[in-house]
Length: 154
Image (cartoon, rainbow, N blue to C red; front, top):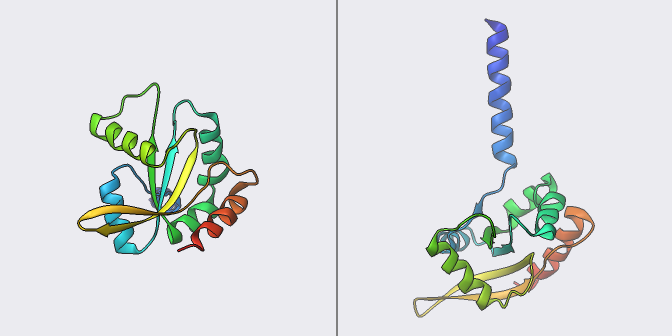
């Protein structure tokens, strides 16, 4: 009985740890805007080709999936993934939202990241653009260093 209880506690603690270490990437920009404004954290728009872009996958593996980035991002950003896959089909409204933002930010290559602050002006949302950053060699510390320079513009 003690062995079963020990195993059960181990699985529960592993599950709780993995939930704490995961980031929440939003896909609904309207929802992310509300969260950003409520938490007073800028949005990070991550324009990616999740199923074909090698540099996007490399950025995620070398930076976004690392504990150092996870901890930093939870304290500093509201994350939004704007995906442009080739093999999987997105919902039409999600695809339209992503296309509109890609055009608004003149995204020409992937990965592209924009750190922005949403502002409501006359019931419309505007994005104060702080800066852009894509793949940066050097792992999470190098990426975070660049992002913090962008955040200084707040």
